[in-house]
Image 1 (cartoon, rainbow, N blue to C red):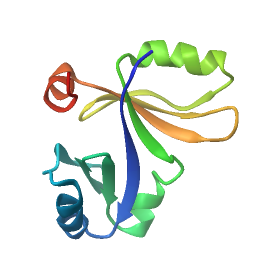
Image 2 (image 1 turned 45 degrees about the vertical axis):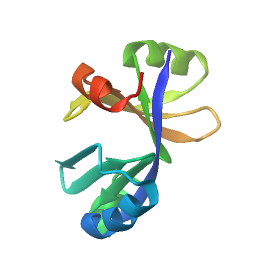
Image 3 (image 1 turned 30 degrees about the vertical axis):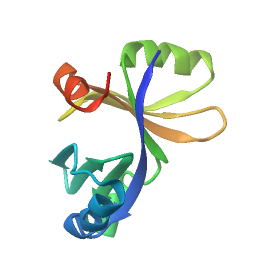
Length: 125
């Protein structure tokens, strides 16, 4: 099981406003930007900005980070053998597949397996 990237989650009412400062801090442009249900997402540097109304953002607030992995199926085996509970099963999303898991210590994480194109574009070799 390989972790490719970990994002700190940032919560915002205004995606463009958040990105303005993050562009300056990271010296980069967003690697991806998309709408998912009622929120907007942008990944820039090691940050994932989740923007929308407080009510809509609350839907995703239980997870403390987003972790991109090479193989989601392998991850499920690893998580379950460590006593984690899959709280959202493997689901197709706009960037690949994802799941949410609660670790045995109570930590909740979103795990994502990106499409091969995204991995090639964003993950340095």
